[in-house]
Length: 230
Ligand SMILES: [Zn+2]
Image 1: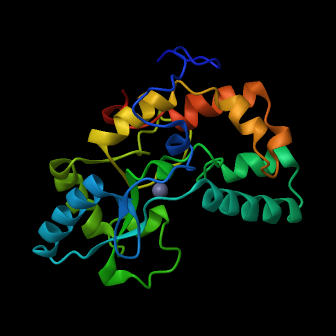
Image 2: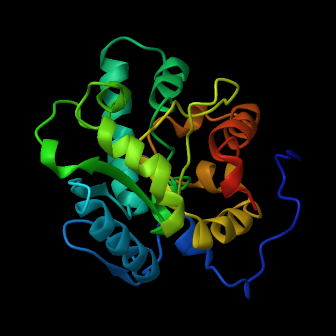
């Protein structure tokens, strides 16, 4: 994997995906009932939902598109909580990025990624936690079904349980629509993420060093299921 703090290729104004769309500040065409996804992604999602129904699984998208401001609210809520718990800024940031992204860097900004559960067990506590997807737990049947079938609809797990993988922890619920998301990541890699993050007013961002962001890009943004790499 070639890693660089500076983008290897500069972002051009005529690139097919706009800068704003990459960081959650665009106005993409979205569809969905109770969630939002790009039209093409939603079409594939609905086909998958229909097929899973025949196996008694009620696939629900509990989180699709997320704007920059929505991610900022999530980030700042966690930052305030961990600081109030007594964690130093750097520790609080490390704790947040076990599962949550820095605003401007979420794949959910692209409208290509979604978090899935089985609606038959929608009242399960801590809905998006790894243990709910284990054998004998509410979402295990969903997990087995997705392992077998999601790829047929173009969806791939992003943060796999590969023990070698760094970055975000294992997220058996988070899937990505490969046909679009690979291009988004390709474009995203051209961005100067450090400058973007330093120019945004986000709590804790004054503690983002160049070394930290470089590591974050390498591990949290790029250390994903190889199926989804450009
Ligand atoms: Zn997710």
